Length: 96
Length: 253
Image (cartoon, rainbow over the protein chains, first blue to last red):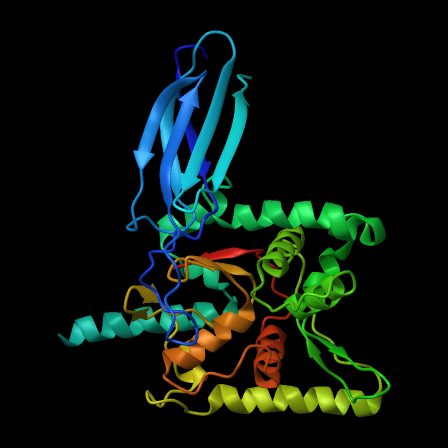
């Protein structure tokens, strides 16, 4: 398993509001609220860093291919949106 | 030219005869990429709602209801006729029922599209996968009559032209099954997998919202969420789907 490539999928629940849509009343704009920054790390080492814009759909899905290192492999994901809300998830890769 | 027409006619006949002999769920009409997305737990956005639903279940529901799977049979029997001493009764769907349950422990007003309601509905719907849809009316004669009237009302709506496009449900969902409508293939109106994650909504939605989208699709006056006619239509469509296996939460374009 070590040295092999595995696909890691990261699904983030977020509305990704563009700021261009109107609310149900048709008058007020729904305020912009998008994830700016996503960082995926493998054992503290950055393997993906992305700056997202309004063109990304809600609940964005990221997929990265990771070469399984020898020893423990901890995948961590950090994201932050333009309102300062942060999210973090960690998962240990387990080879079977 | 004539031969081509015959072939097209034959294909149409085959599609319609398949639809009649063996009832196909809407999921059978999805393009392959959406079909595989629905099966990929890691990529399917509905797993966000499903996970949240399980968290809420453990915090609020488990104590009384026990395992989620214990309600699997109940999930496929909605909408249900609920009556009390003061009223003759009305139809409640799964999201309404979840809202009623959540109201017991909170003062918040719940709608069918509240995030928590959809999360629980998604998780319950997932737990009910494979159950056969069963729709039964109330046993008391007067109530049964009122229930039947709702069914008749919906059957009438289903075949009545409406909106600026002047279309009835039946014209597409019975007479044009298998035909392309823009990028989608028209499926028969069987209700076998809700809530849905509709990519054009960029979120999950209940059957209430889906039916309202049908009204706006034919440019008719859209009834407000929770309208009796929406519940009646759900009852009618579920009755048509009776006996079909429940697909669980589904993906739509």
